[in-house]
Image (cartoon, rainbow, N blue to C red):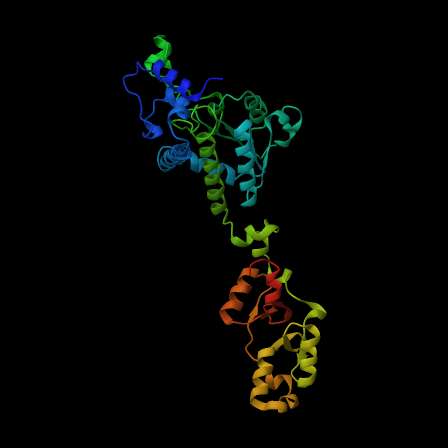
Length: 392
């Protein structure tokens, strides 16, 4: 094995004929494309991460400029096709593009647009039946010439399924080598500077979205980095624009995310409240000793005062302490109707747990009576119930 210093010296001798050689302190965007594979020998490792992020950020800036300009109409048309889709959005891609396709399909599904990922190879071996009339296909391919994707085109066209593509057709050739490192191939050298023509996949699409980049962030210019970042961002842009067009609301998001910490935060009050026999309740005529017994037995520190199922008021531990301070033992001679708070704080069963918590914190209370539109008592939600959601 050669030592790193020996390799570095040899490379410097090889490229000594270059008229301009970049400094290690120069940003990677100033390095000739053909020298990017030499980057590890000249640039300190601490700068590599910064360069990668800057290249990908520049690719995203260019994508945003296209969305605001020449690609705006195509983007809107893609959103319209997906919005009017009567079936599902079938997202497909191979390799790294396939991984991005999986994430885009998941994002679409979680924001109100039914979607699934179709592996193109599995499709060619039986899973092609997933695609039916009424679907929309979103195909990802950096080159636009991925053989496994192209083999799906016949079925897509036969079923008259709209095709949206994400490709990097406008991406420069892999390497634009400086003359000392490039052969003297004449026309071949000139072709290395030319942009690719529209790919087969993009040409077959109803809408072709441009994910082109100036260069990959990989020092070799080979590993999908900036290209997959632009695809992912464009997929997110489609999903969010589509969800806004559908009028997708927070409650819709909650219905699709019942699990995890997010699901707990968006849980409905009705799923957390105490109901049925677990709800402490007394009538307005109930004597205070029986009120205290009911509160102690149900262990919520509060009781609803009801007439039938209709809410008249509540009595809390705080109300008992206040009455005892004012009346002493005479409190035991009173009725629930005489001690209750007549304007209790309530909440609806479809409210979010986060809303209940915010209301308790604002009012400095530990319980809310859950009522329907007619103020019929449905249950009681306690602060302890919300602790289980990991919100507090």
